[in-house]
Length: 323
Image (tube, rainbow, N blue to C red; front, side, top):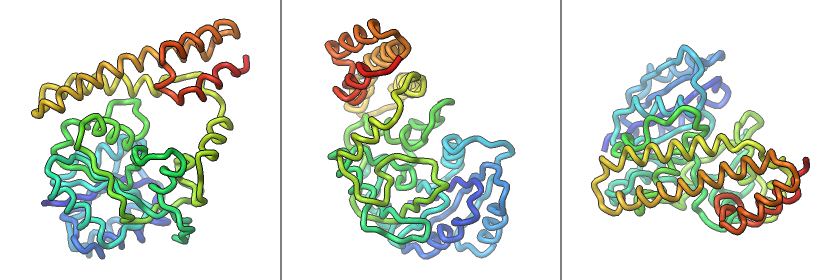
């Protein structure tokens, strides 16, 4: 298999050298590194150019003239890769030296798999580890491993690119789009429970998801975090994802070759239509007066609409909304 790394950078000079060095010590070296830089203002490009001069594999550096944002920057990097397997890389992590070899083996032994995601140690900016891993935190907080969708821990097969790209405008998070689509189809996604890298947590990280904490969490932490956040009044981000998913499933049904995949796409499209109705009702609820809000909340509860949110917890949040 030909191996590509899709690296998205933006003002990453502080931590980038350690990540690049970790590529060099892989037991199975990549065939190419494709870097899309989102118009950095520091010396990220200079570091990349110096690295490319001595790298044992091809390094292609593409600098965006305008800022695309991390979602579309990753999509661009993926689209420019030529490998049979494409590893996604953040600019501030460090890979273990067996990562490429281990993940590639999973693709080789599981030909129907489109996406592999693996576990990682959660460390601080100095790479100090408190003992927790990303998958462990997800299990402690949510009880299952299904929420492990981190882009930096993801690799995808080239066969999946026509399905996942382009990422529709307005989608925030390439990782949720990649895993959300793949999870629709049985046997197309593998969760590897081995830690194959570290995820560096520092004040410049964009995600504040509770499972990214370096301290051990539990279901109570997830529950408290949900109630500490202000209830949403705008669900347009989820509506954009829903619409994007429906459109993409309608398009790819024509290119899917397994009957089970076609059936899954049709079934998911039906589910998405119901979810869209629930999202629109909850958006109306969020801006309604007290009596109308309570009526809509109980109506949604009876219809089962809260299954598309956080169940009874979302219902209770709607009942006690202020305003």
